[in-house]
Each structure stands twice: as structure tokens, then as C-alpha cells.
Length: 186
Image 1 (tube, rainbow, N blue to C red):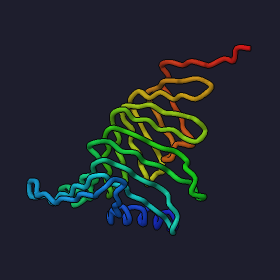
Image 2 (cartoon, one colour):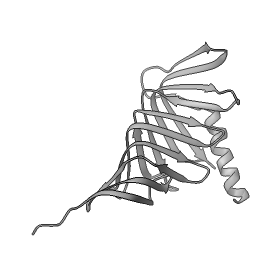
Image 3 (cartoon, helix red, strand yellow):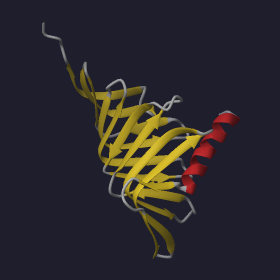
């Protein structure tokens, strides 16, 4: 891995750890709670913008964000009430959007685990439906070993093993269990 890519990854997670929060609602509420000797911060109505060299790369919106450290002092950000993660290209255009009912970001491992009603769509009108996805930012990859369904204007296909890039502009689906092709009827 190049020094440039390592510095980009470090910058992303450094900015993530700073948690630049802004509120899209009327008021941002932040509370500090001591839970089992672990310092926990909770914020409501959160929007986090992640940038690289001054360019927006990701925007996370969550109705509730809980931030804490685990036993190994790894910063964890949990979105127990759901999340929307928007990916931008270098021209600040929306590239893809992921929504889920639950998400947990592990900053040390650079992993985002999203679960329940996961929907990931890109600008090519490709849509992925899943129960869970694991996004590995260090490897620029998305994985799932559970059932996922890919759908677009041409049809849909269901499989049990997914590998894609982290902004869902390229993917591979295997262990196919079902497929349907939309034919144009003229």
C-alpha cells in the first residue's frame, strides 16, 4: 500500500475521531454518560462530514450517535437508530447512498458494520438490498456472506457472497440462488 493511500486512510479516521458534528434539526444534544467505567458520548440529530484535502468524501447522518471506546481503546461509533451514509466523487457529486437501521464503526480496524434493512444504491440506478454488510475502508471493499439482492433496470439477482468497492460502483455476487431478467415487451 502506498504512503499516499496510508495517509488518506489515517486522515479519514483522524477526522472521524474528531467527530465534527452538526445538527440538521433544531438543536444538537450531546450528553456524557459513564457506563461500566467507559466514557460514552451520545448525540442526537447528527451530521458528520468526512473530507480529504478539503474535498467532501462522505457524509453520515444519524438520528442518534453513541461514541465510546472498547477494552483496546478503539473508538467506536454506533448508530442504534439507523444511518444514512452518502459517498461523493472528486467533483462533489453524489456517487452512492447507503441506509440501514443500525450501524457500528470500528475506527482502529477501519470497519463499518451495517445491519437490518440495508439499502445501497448508486447513480447508475443499481440497488443492493441486504440484512447486513461489512465495509472495510482500509481495503476499499464491501463484504457479505448473507443473502443479498442486486436490482437494476435490467432485472434482479440474489446471492449469498458479495464483494464490492466501498462506494458500490463495482461489485461481484456469487452463490446465486435466484435471478430475474426484465425483457422489453414491444
